[in-house]
Length: 460
Image (cartoon, rainbow, N blue to C red; front, side, top):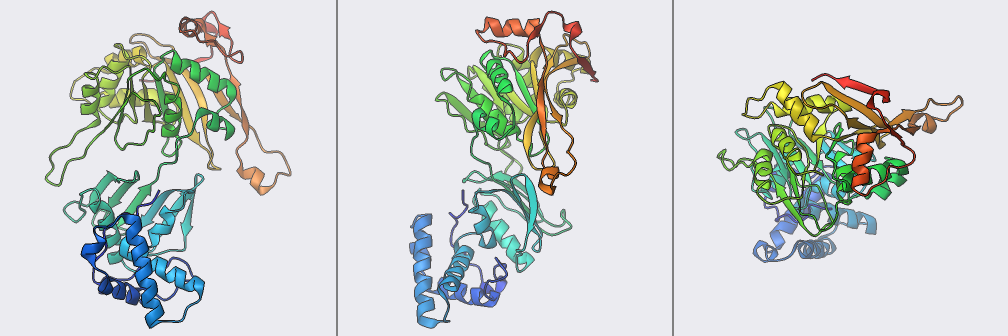
């Protein structure tokens, strides 16, 4: 997905030329000269009436005529590179355009004009690209944020927004950023199905059967994990198991979920405008969603006082809801839910919050991004505690990493290997599945007494 639908730039070429896209590119001065010639020859009023793709075609044609008429003599490859770079500068985002056109890149991180990193397949790498100046980087940033009617300057040095083309953009500039203007563009991958996640090793077939049964049986599920661990990807895959006749309301900070059902209402929070007014928070949306007759509520991420409203919804008739939270373990997820719930303006004792969580949450799914960049479920945990007692959880599935064998190659050493271990489910949970018409996968089994389970407590 590209960000090419931008208005024509009318800045003075003396403000700085584009960055170097590759070591083989022509001199920056050549690009600046032809950008100036192009802007002098086109009719901006006419260009504004064209669609984005038409603008690009028109500019490439005009620039081709200019180069043919005035030189220099270039090879076919050099000519194509020059035309692309000049048009990218005039119409798009300069050196970022090829990165945005690369579907394998999931995140672009610009740490000042001289440092650009990208993430591919879970691995971060630095690219031999740079902006020619801090001014050029700022011009690119201003062009990006202008598409969402935002501005960035010393009085408003931070911007966090979702672009019309779907990418999430975060900008922070000096004086808050000491390394220069910083730009982070996160591109969301296509929606993966559970079958596809099975193929890439994020879970196994027994876990798929169990999670599918839990979603259809309307268990309340919390997906937890660190940044970039695949929480939204899994949440989206799980949501595909919700029956098509149910009314689903999704609530997100930046819309990422891509549900395929027909009866879906998508809500997205809104930041304050430049005057500091008009903010609509996740909590506002959660509260409003309860008046919209939802069968299921899906919250992209709970991160504040809305956690209390979400927990109350889960425990008062909105079974089968899903949400994500940032946490490194299942125990951390519970304590974080408790902490976030206390951030609402309602003064609720921790013991009462523990009661809410014990009543609302059924399943915790822990995701981890491994050192080799792979993302997988590392634990499925069951919340067994009741009332105000301490959180007590039992593992239903866990990933067991295997040590490397001697003589392994470097690639084999970098790859995380292991297997999934499946443990028995308590009779109470199994009965809930049976009542809903779902079966317990044979790999798990059932135990009659909770006391024989390998339970553990989480502080909170």
